[in-house]
Length: 203
Ligand SMILES: C[S@@+](CC[C@H](N)C(=O)[O-])C[C@H]1O[C@@H](n2cnc3c(N)ncnc32)[C@H](O)[C@@H]1O
Image (tube, rainbow, N blue to C red):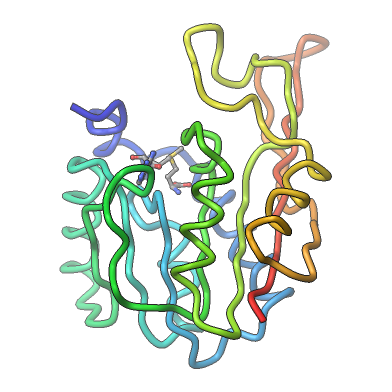
């Protein structure tokens, strides 16, 4: 049982998640010339980001390791009558990579769930065509209050450190933009959590 399975049916009821996905899609469109690229999203959840990008891409493969998320995604694809989205059950941390290669690989709020960042970056580099673009949206470094004490993933990412790891994996022209800000709490106790978009290129 994946932690995300039981969150899947209500995932799209949260307006912040919808606005976040749209803001990241807008950021990707500002930084990458998308037309005619094939896309691969990892940790796609219910597909919010890919649905926002779909009008600008040729075809999208959406990978996740949560059966619950993929069930919701399949229903959304059927309801939309879309023929160029393909859901894929894949654990990016442990499964063999698919054989296909893509012009754009992207994700939103998934990198911090996978312990081995260097390994994921190497896998994403392999999944890209030459040339190709990687777009990763995730939390900037935070004090752990975003998920709370029980969470054992990454407490966001330091941009310089992530850029170094991306370069070690083979990426060039690594750059960052702040594309969204989430908040938790109210009044004076409110905390802001900025989200970066990292864009990197495979030559
Ligand atoms: C915070 S959710 C984000 C979902 C979606 N990107 C969004 O922003 O609405 C993280 C997603 O990553 C998926 N995930 C976590 N670890 C993964 C892994 N190793 N391989 C594939 N998907 C993973 C989870 O199942 C979940 O759907």
